[in-house]
Image (cartoon, rainbow, N blue to C red; front, side):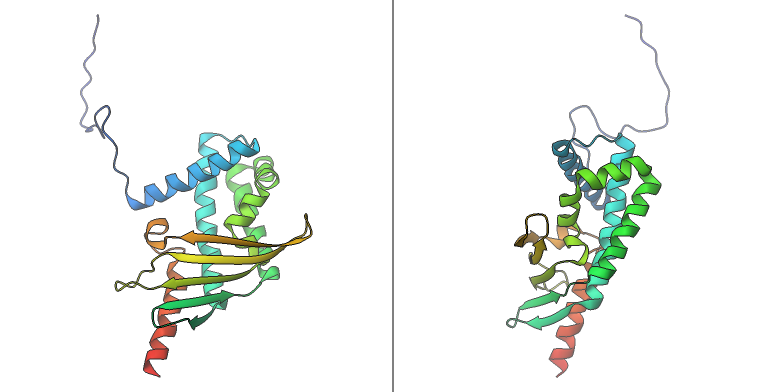
Amino acid sequence: METTEVNSSVEPVASVGEPIALDAEASLMLSEEIAWRTAGSAAGLELTDAQWRAFAETAILHQAIRCAYEAEIANVTMVNDTLSRVTIPCYAEEGESLRDEFFLALKEVLGGEAAMQVFRRLGRDLDARFGGFGVAVQTLELSLENDGGASAVTRTAHYWNSDEERAVVRREIHWPQLEDPYGDAWGPLIARVEQFIGRRARG
């Protein structure tokens, strides 16, 4: 057997069989990509590896944009001393603009045909991920931790399914500190709740 020795100053990331530790940002990106690959596989959507990564990056970015806007229009009330309720009204017109911006961003990173396929095949998944792009009335309930983060958030969305002509209620449970370690998406809403609690405490 002939062997060739290669000198390199680059240390191996991990030994064979050793798990590779991902930082929070890389873990978030990987989780997002896996979720869309899974949905895409079920819908028959085929993209290259580079396109899947670009899709995930774009989705995370525009999810943060959506969440920042929702934080601006949210109404906060207190259910009790520890539980806050956040109501986000419909914003269909603004939501359509957010949807258009997301589509244009996908066209830029994926190409026009691939972006069209994403919207055609993953339309329902995108609506679910982005809260219907403003067509749903959303209610969120959360409790703030001592460190300023939020524990589990229960999101309930009420919207009209025009395809099936019926009202739909969708409930989700989110874990902001795991899903969004840097606060890019959940940060503005949590800050809005903290601001409300602070004003309430001051009387």
